[in-house]
Image 1 (cartoon, rainbow, N blue to C red):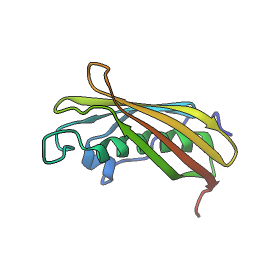
Image 2 (image 1 turned 45 degrees about the vertical axis):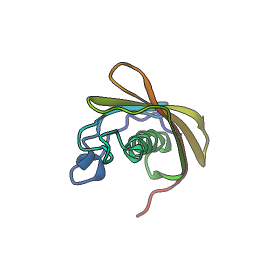
Image 3 (image 1 turned 135 degrees about the vertical axis):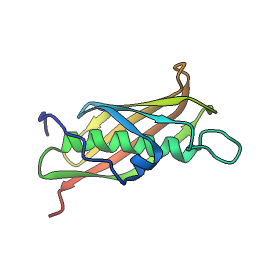
Image 4 (image 1 turned 180 degrees about the vertical axis):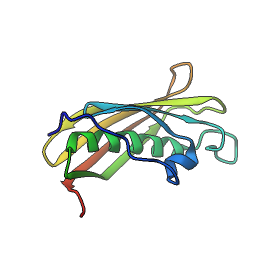
Length: 134
């Protein structure tokens, strides 16, 4: 697929912007990003599991798009997440790593960790690679 450097599109006004997600690295092999716990909690003050899922899908999808290359797009078709523990404060870090990079399907494992490197969530995202919409 593509070894062309990948430019992350603008996140202004997107869910990433509202959740404070900052993408720090993207290539076809994986992606890394951060997200604050503050503002992304459930009513008991814990990091919301859905927030971890959003971070995971964001990082995996961007890496899949980098793999897809110009004129192609990656769309998520399946996401699962196991929540191991939670966080009440600080910033969490997500690391997506390619498990399979095919011509039409790609799969990434995404690990979300707290500031001390403790695993909070393990997710797996599968995307379909399609022709980019015109």
